[in-house]
Image (cartoon, rainbow, N blue to C red; front, side):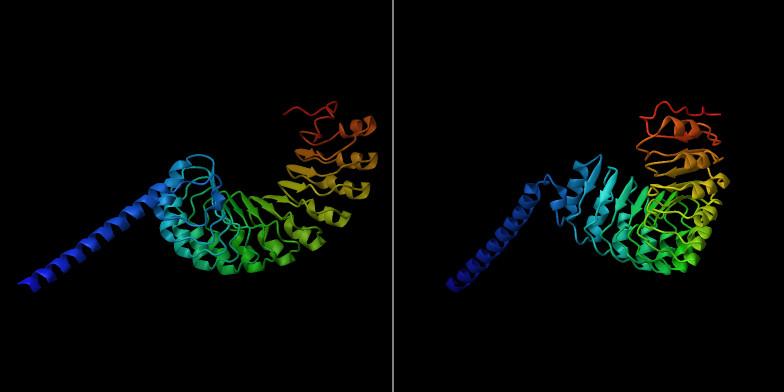
Length: 341
């Protein structure tokens, strides 16, 4: 009987210890969750539990939530982050992204998601990303993209798709990206572009950002001039008459913000332009160039880079044949601008 009582007592003691240990564990876990405080700099956060992610998104109901310290992300946490009510979700510390996580993030409906650290995506992940409900999708960390991934991204329903890290673009990928239905396609990392790829991507109907191109071959200019949208070529520093002539077929906007000088011979080619707007980065201008630019008959020309303007050149530019004339920096307030028709 005594032996039985000892065994019973030992069993009861062990059970009590196990119960207490479990309760202590639960209490410690609860205490850990309660004690977690949101750091002042959210970029220092390297990981979150789903509960912490929920607390974090509830605390940031406006503005942006920047979590660039994340190097990995699971689906449960991604699902909570997608519930963020603010504008921008920044996750540029992620270097990889699988399709399951992308599908959870796709529910984020606000301004945009920045995934500029992701260096590679496959076709499944691209298709998941295309389901994003955000206004803008940034994938500026991609240096290459194959045709399959490009085909996945073309279905993105947002307004802006930024792929400004791409260093190369083949024709098949260009064909797919040109089918994106948004208003902005950023390919500003390209420093060269093959004529066939240029011809393909020119089918994009929004603003095509090719700010990385520093020079234009005539055949590339000819292809890009077929663009259905506007062109941003802000790194082109020099322009030959031949290239200017090819660009004259552009129908919408043309931005050449990196073009700081322009000779009269090349400027004369602008008389044939009929595009809606031209933005030139000229810092100085002589009378010959001014007279040539005044023959442009599109809607408006902007010369906001000018650092000086003589009364003689001002008078020449005032004769602009553009519908809204030529705009200058605000300090040249004596230049008359044409009223809106």
